Image (tube, rainbow, N blue to C red; front, side, top):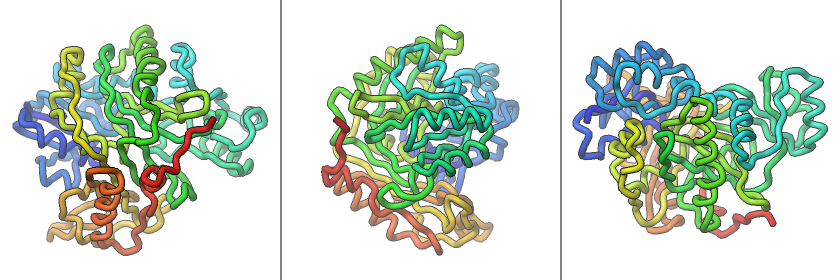
Length: 415
């Protein structure tokens, strides 16, 4: 199988490692890729959000499967353009990707499907924002209605900060706060059949103890020792299958990766958001635990044959990833600094670039992450932090508490 991977972040490096390890993959091309991906794939330049350019590249490299990593190309219609060339693609159509591209669309689908989620209002002016904030009260949850690279959500007790974020976004969804630990569940689907991956938890706030502004994610771990045993089955029954059925009813079947962001409340799981692709950095830990060959799994979803795929196989133990961010992230990350110590197994590249002389430099806010497995969560956490401590990058920072509450048994479900 010849595979084209679209994207160049940490999620795509994790996907590249999984795809390259599949014996069925005879050639892996990534566009545009990054220095880490270059170790396991050949790189090609492409504008990832240009559907015609990606489709032409897929034809040029004779791809049997195209895997679209980021959300922006999906919302732009890259998967549609590739499918129009008769090439299998893992990723939803532009219409189905509106589950992530528009918070309002996602809420409409959830309401129609009877999916448990927070009450919400879409607001486009200050008066509507004020009414919604009044009704729900603090903590205030204000979400940019469109794509925001994981940083469009403000959760705050500060009314002025909530109003300011709403004004900056223009069109927002304001919803009631869901109290409870958060879970990310990835589901591989061909539009009808659906296979859940291991649930994970990520850490959105920049600082220890969930302090500071939201980021694209500062770390993650799997599995979740504190999660209810029936969690995945319940979410598949109450959320995933009703959502897929509603999208089929609308003539926009969802084939690809359905990311379900959940809060585990006293009343049970409630959907915070949907994404239309693998999450970053949860992908790093989930794929580290997957034994089933990745390319075969994604190809089955892309070709409508997932119902016949064998049950997924998972490694024993646990996985943890810790993100190393550039100085100034998330507000204004500094780039161009030299990185050393990133040439070890388990280091996943996200925002890096390589000079002509081979020097590795920072090129984004989330620069890289250390991903490790272990016999249990504590061992995996310690190994991940050992990887991170071996990286030298001026001004870099990382959270020091990834997976600690789970290791220490400090996560509780309300009620």
